[in-house]
Every structure is written in structure tokens, then in C-alpha cells.
Length: 354
Image 1 (tube, one colour):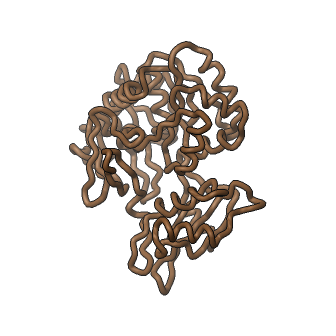
Image 2 (cartoon, rainbow, N blue to C red):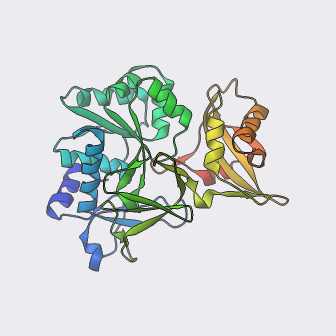
Image 3 (cartoon, one colour):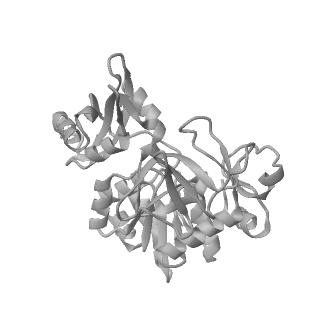
């Protein structure tokens, strides 16, 4: 596990690289020796890769984050430091010169525990921040108690690591939580696009519909590979809205091809979670002899005892996305399986359909 002392040494005196996940790192050679941090990707699209990040990229990301949010502040660490999102909370604390608050995640994320961990952080003067994944935010919003009350007091609650249902964002903001959506990955030192707008100095472009990122927050490269160039090509599809904000449409390798139609699961998920009674949804493609693939949806209802009508959900998808995207199979589940820092495990979802 990454500790504040180890990370501080790596960032300020060349004491790295700090290894985020347990295990041995092969000897670093050439350009690799400039790494301050080694963090392994989740392997959601293939074999996990070890990303090597330099101190300059990490600290620049932290400085740009503070500039966007309104200045340095005290952070609450509510994410594991085996992934870049949690590590960046520590980096920002080092850059700000302030000790972070730390939430004990051993028993899992609970709203009451979040409230307790927040008290000493919020009691200090200045600005206050934390970073969460959508599942954690959903748990705070679901219980109108001390956890939600604490979340309201932060100057910004960064949300990333997975797509956040628009309905959850809307509800959170209605309740007074200052939510800031983030997009990024280990290869970009964490979040580099906030509420659809790249951080200062970060460049985003689309090439054949794929998002590419450039700028001072890029990692050095993958261990055992070649160093990154000027641009990093992500695995995500995107588009730029008329107001210049970047919209992430989902991963290119998640696209479902059914009857010759290309269907982005993220669009179907947004249509589902916009419906009353739906808390979360995950859409996957299942092999089908006639259509090639069919759309299947795992839905977490707000009330398990009174879930939404399946036909109404499918009709809503047809109205918003198109009839070709209507789920052929829908199953209600108590929760979605997760991996890494809160991302839905699509492979596990697909296998649950049998």
C-alpha cells in the first residue's frame, strides 16, 4: 500500500518508485528510472500493464486540480491507495502541505463511517475535498443521514473511476453535494477532465472517435515498453459537445454489434438510469446465433420489492436510443459486481446471465 511518507519521498527527493500494488517490479532501465510511481492497470481490456509515472506529472496534476477547484485544501482519503484515484488524494495532500484525513475501508464503505472520518477534516480551516466512486456517492445519497450531511460540507466531491448515472448526479446536486465529475486514468495521472473540461494545459482530441490525451500529466509509459509520445490513445469513445465539453460515450471494446447495429452500452445505461425506480444499470452484449449479439441489462432497482416494469424500461430505451438498442434480457440484481476502484465488472455481469 502507498503511504504518505513513501510518496512524499518519491515526489520530493527521488526516493521512488513507489509500487502501488503488492509484488516485485522488474529492474527499471533507461527512461523507466525516472519513475516516481508504478501502478498497475485493472486489466479490464486485456493483460494488466504497469504504468510508470514521473514526479512532475503527478504533482502537476495535483496543482492543476487545486487550481480548478479554487485552491489547495485538506483532503479525506476514502479510496484505496492501490489505484491512481486514491494515490492522487495523497499527492494533492503532499503538494498542499497538509495531512489528509483517512477513512478506514476495511469494513467497506458505510455512510456513517464517512461522517466520522469527515469530522476532523471539516473541523480544520480552509477548503475541504474528497474523492469518491459512484457507488460510494449512491450510498451517501440513499441515506439522508450524517454521511450525506458531511458530503454537503465539502467544497468539492470528485466523482470518477466509472461512469456516473446522470440521475445520481442530478439527485446529489439537488441535495447540496458539490459534485465534480472527473475523467482520466492511470496513464494520465488520474482525472484530467473535470465536468467535461480539460484541466489547464491538458489537451484532448478525437481520432476516429477515440479520445486521445496530451499534456503535462501523461505518464512516462508502460514498464517494459516504449515511452509514451506526445499523445496517449485511450480505449474510450467520445465526442465534443457544442459548448466544447468532452463527453465520454464508453469503451470502444464494449460496443455491442446486434443485427449490424453498433450499440454503445453507456447510452443504454443512461436511458435506463433516467427512469424512475432505477438506481444503477449495466448493459452487456450476449452471444446470439441470429443477431450476433443481443443487449442484456442488469438493473439495480431503488426498491427491490417493487422494481420498475421491464416493458416500460425497454420502451424507454427504444424512445431514447432506438428500437435496435432495446434490451432482449433484463435481470434485477441487488448490486452490481465491482472491480478495481469502483468500476463495474462487465465480465461478471455477462456471466451472470448464464
